[in-house]
Length: 534
Image (cartoon, rainbow, N blue to C red; front, side):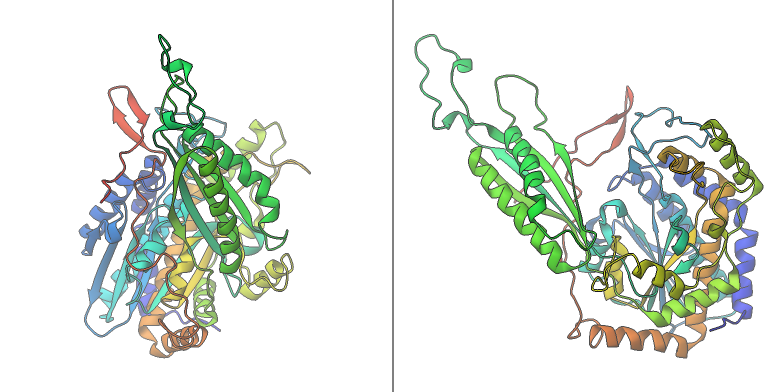
């Protein structure tokens, strides 16, 4: 398939060129905010202000998520609704300045959040596409609507299942999901068939109620004080037992196949001090990735069983609350084909000499001789979707339909969706058997010459694809027909999977996620207050 360079597409591409410097500055603004998941207050406010300035109607805090947003802009009437989005959460523990040596960001904790993928550029790619599309629609009187989301907490696969459960995606005709990548065989392409799988996450809260009533506590006599009686093991011990029990039973959750993983984080060890009073509550989060809902359910059953028995051993009450439950992604070959044809029209990113010299300097600082080309050449080349699919399929079992995780997959069940990957600058390994440290990846994220070509390319592909769907009813009809076929009749069809969190799911914003606030001492970690229970 070959995409046509229509006048509207020319206008969109010209708009990107004319606004490239401003968009580069925009990216660096978000990069410098580096706010972690569910706490992206300044980043979300920036998008709200910018979109309103561009004429969009904006709903801040969509679906009850304080750092989410839903923005719309319409031209004429009767045209299709095309969707793209921004993410902007940074990753705790990835703090790094944009310098060619290891240096955490100044003014915050050494293990504060930093952009890795980076989502700062992901968001600007989506915004570039939306605004370029808007400019062309105005210039050429194209009827249609742009729907743009601010999606927080992607690193927890957080917002999209919640937006989906509130029905925000149900009126979209087609959606373009973009992500930067440095995966050689999936750079500068679209996913053909094997989309991301499930990501489920729960927080288990153990609460110690009346620990002094522990059966072997005994009675206080005479001058004995409270140190002299036994108390229930309580919440901290419950959390420790949950941690170790899950490690012991991990081998028994599922067979060793399907690339499934299980990870945990201790969110709260009781928020107490080491005295004779046992911590009253503790919290541990589990997150698991697997290719199917059935596999995810098997892991959940073991964790729930562990939690129940651990609570009984320690005289605690336990409750579990969902953070997220994503559905496995569903392909749309028609939209993938249209998007890749426009990618061929636009061409892959080309990184600047500034960025390449920065990369060489990193390699020299690591103690190795720097090559002329510090980035893999394939990051500046297109990869045919079917070829990329064949390489991916060769690495996983034939029965496995999905691989790894990202919450865009929930969108695929509500509208024809394409997953667009654009190559981001990343270093070659400097010697056989030597891996580049993670900080190098993060440092490149703050170098305009390394990031601008990537997210501006993404914006061009998003805009030209969206315009093609608006100008060609036949192209959009093909995408919708495939969606209807795969779901057995569209939303609510006999093969359609509804949102797994149920209808109007609450946002998990009350947990003690990593967060920075300004105090008289400067930026500090805090534990947020939980919501009032009914």
